[in-house]
Image (cartoon, rainbow, N blue to C red; front, top):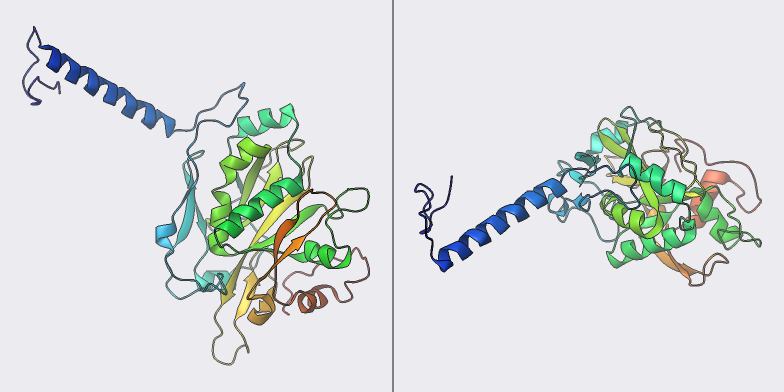
Length: 331
């Protein structure tokens, strides 16, 4: 309907408007254009010759759905009937759920993604940005992510091979500056996993990196952070490849002890299926590492009893070996 000079919407605007009324119409028209522009901005935009990420809003973390349900000393603890935790990407208008249902987490066998892999960035942009080259290195990206997590009191701990390297080689890279491992393994609490996902657009613009989410039963069970340079977009579950070692984020959850079933609550990495007594993992420790690959020290988080954890997973971890951590190991 057409607004009138006195604010009513049912009468036509008379000719010969006074200056005040004309000003009001200009204001209303300007407001209308602003609203339409913002509505268009909420949809994914694809540019064949894009040199920057497509128009998209920041990923939205639904913090209000996850209030006061985790312990500060152990942010992976679950309670019965927890509210759902999810983050939404306007790049594909999808909601991504982080599991919080205790029974589902207990029963999920790991290493499967019946929902395939979803990227949080437009495919065209990934391919275009990758061809441009000059993506940031893995350590600067990892260091930046850790700073965001620590500033927000999150939990993102070193896992598996990286835990060995900081204790054995005292670094992630060798004397030649090359990565010892082919990726950086991390364990994340449910809230931190969602928080890291909200950083994806900044990873695009600052570093030329993107994210892949592995989905099972509609839930995120693994996140891979990967450089677009040298990366071929694939929607199949598997190891990501690019010009830089990737960063793999494994969701972990604490399952409450039931009766005499276990002596302690159990912390479970749901993708690998490994399980640890809670005191081995929490409270987490913080440490600073001076790496050959970085000018500034890396701020890290590690499990509470890393030596005991590594002995369980690898046996004699002090001797270099091609042995990987076993699947579904119970420590």
